[in-house]
Image (cartoon, rainbow, N blue to C red; front, side, top):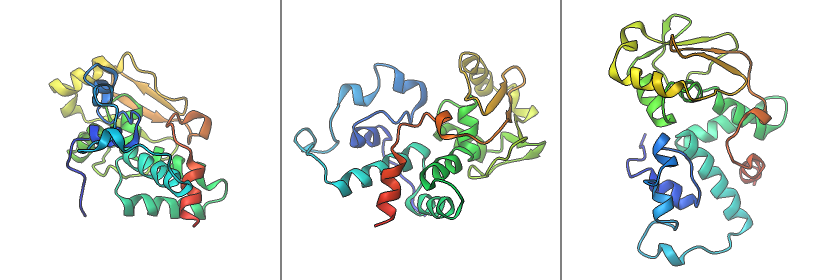
Amino acid sequence: MGRYTDSVCRQCRREGEKLFLKGDRCYSEKCALERKPYIPGAHGKGRRQKPSEYGLQLREKQKTRRIYGLMEKQFRNYFKKADRKQGITGENLLILLERRLDNVVYRLGLASSRKEARQLVNHGHFTINGKKASIPSMMVKVGDIIQVKESSKSSPKFLEIKDAATYKTPPEWLSVDVENLTGTILAYPIREQIDTLVNEQLIVELYSR
């Protein structure tokens, strides 16, 4: 399966808004969207046009997929799972995406971005309920305890993360013990607790075509 290897800042420029793919850099003057607020490419400055209904739906899906760092097939599979669940499909989709281990690590403040969280999980720096967890797509459950491995806590990277996490507040469905680099799943999120700026109904409409 292929993976996007170009500059992630191009993705923000393509969507015309910040997707916060590079952590703290997105809040600084180094943000590419601040310096080049137009679509990437030779003719980017003149390419913004009023999108069609389909275009709006497609862009919302692409934006959401990029925020959570998923490939098309992965994202479609999450939609299918959300559609099979009881409740509102769009909200089900966001809740599933939020329950991914890499997203939870990011939400807890134990990584500066979802991309960094995915790398740290892949490299085996985290445990769930005391057992090694190295698959970013693992779905967390209520009561799960996510913790940085003891052997990783003293590394320069996690000392840096620990310092930064002190100033971050996790969403209400999570709790974090910064001193011990540990987080707990208190509940599954509800839509009002998910601050991802997407219109999930447009995604439902796109896949319902």
